[in-house]
Length: 150
Image 1 (cartoon, rainbow, N blue to C red):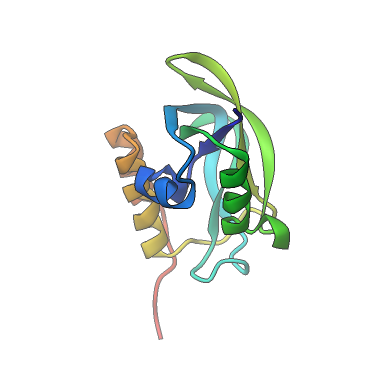
Image 2: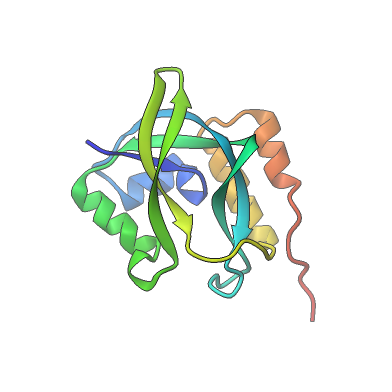
């Protein structure tokens, strides 16, 4: 069964249970040589959306799911594959079980823009629920976000 590496709101096991009820959490791990960033501010309803880009000095916490074909199709719809918001890429994830190959969604837009404070909150709560280390969650909560104003 293919592995899906969740790094954004889908890190939250409860969210994934709703979206992909037949796809259990297998493990957590790290994308070494990648960093979490934001882009596509014009695509999101509430600011920029999260994505990952290669960066040899960084790492991103991920949750690995054994994903069924039906659940992958449902997740593609949630993530806007058919309208070009995200695209799938293959990556190597480092976990306690060793290096594993998985796929993830990468934003199909230029890097840049700021997410909303509520989106940052969603990301940090999802990471916390998935068991991310405290320093990772704290760093997420400290990310710059869009200011709300008249």
